[in-house]
Image 1 (cartoon, rainbow, N blue to C red):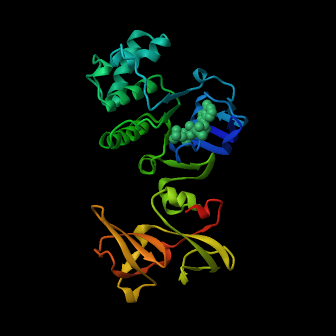
Image 2 (image 1 turned 180 degrees about the vertical axis):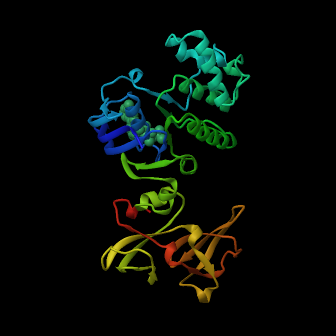
Length: 350
Ligand code: ATP
C-alpha cells in the first residue's frame, strides 16, 4: 500500500499548552481513516496540519514522501469538508459544485460532465437548479462533499461533517460517505468523537486523547484488543478492575483467581483487567465465580443492561436473561472474556 501522508514526530502547542505531543501517523492511499477521541484531544489540529492551516512546532508533514510543512493549503492536493459546510447561498446546487472548477478555468463542457458525475455520486442528480437554501441538512452536506470532491483531491479531510445532522440522517450519511470513499478511491481522513461512527465507517481508527495517539488499528482490533485502559473505556463499555498477574495465564482480582489467556507480564505484577459487559455470564448464585446483588436493570431492546454490585465494584453486564433488582446472582468469566493490560497513566481514572 502506498503512503500518502506521513506525520513524523509532530509537536504542536498553543499559548504554551501542548496540543499534540510526538504524534506519528502514516495514512495510506484509498484508506478511510478516522481520528477518534474526546473533545479537545487535538483531532482538529491534526487535520489542520494535514490541510496546511497550521504548521508543526516540531516534526514534519510529508505528502508522497516530500516535506510539505510550509506548503500553503491551496497548493496541497487536499480538500476539506467542515461541519458548517458553508455553501454559497446565492448559487444553486450546480453552481456550488461547479465553483472550484470555474476558479480553475476548466472548460465549460468538462465542468458540465464533472458536476453531473459528482451529483450522481452523492445521489443528487436532478437537483441541479435547486437553491441550496431549499435543501435539507443532509442534502446540503452532500452538496458540500460533491464540491470538495469535484476537483479530485488525493485526500479529503472531513471534520465532524455529520455532527449537525439528526440521528437517522447521520446513519444514512455514514453509509453514503463510506460508499463514496470506496467508489472514488480518494483517501478520507475523518474526525469524530463518536466511537460507533468511527467503528462502523473506517478501515483504520486512530484513538487519541490529550494530544497523544493511543492506538492505531482496524475497528475490530481496536475493539477486541484495546492497548490500554483509556482505549478500552472509550471504545464501547468496559469493566476495568485492578488486578495482579500471578503468573502466565493466571490473574487475580476481586479476591479471586481466574484463568486467562495472557502471558509474559511476569509474576505478581499489577495490571488492569478489562471485561466487556457482553462477555460477563450470569449464573445462579451458587455457580458463580463471583457473587453479587443486582442494583439496576435497564431494557435496551435486544438485551438488558444490568448493574451487579460485587463487594462494592459495580459490574456492567449485558444479558438476554431477565433478572430482578435485589436478586443475588453469580458471575462467571470465561478465560477469553478477561483482557489484561499493562498499567498506564490512565489506569486509575476509571
Ligand atoms: P473537538 O472535538 O472539540 O473539536 P478536537 O479534538 O478537535 O476537539 P482541537 O480542536 O484540535 O481538539 O483542540 C485541541 C486543543 O487546542 C483545545 O484545548 C483547543 O482549545 C486548543 N486550540 C485549538 N486551536 C487553537 C488555537 N488556534 N489557538 C489556541 N488554542 C487552540
